[in-house]
Image 1 (cartoon, rainbow, N blue to C red):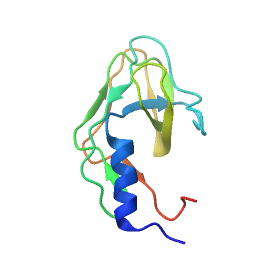
Image 2 (cartoon, helix red, strand yellow):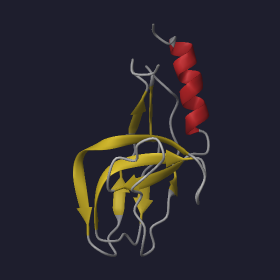
Image 3 (cartoon, helix red, strand yellow):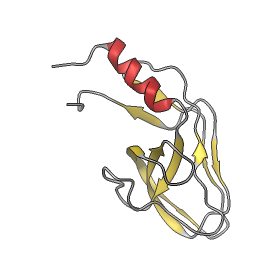
Image 4 (tube, rainbow, N blue to C red):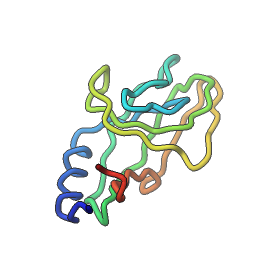
Length: 120
């Protein structure tokens, strides 16, 4: 059974409204596990464009300053800047390694969350 495009857009709009992007060294699973910590890392408010074809993309760039030395493999979404509830995680196409103090950037349009047919 498939979700209608209308329902996909409604679900994605709920997730996108007021979300904070997080960075993870491992699969965040269903709880937001393996989020990085240290130095000046903070979750960043992410602004998404309008849902299209069951997906949303970041409408503006994301900048994480003062990174710890880590290899980032996943991006997550939370509903709060601190603590809060984990919403969703996606794997990067390729892992990216940062040195302590680096800035980790995601260009506008490069972060996609997609419902696809995997929702049950």
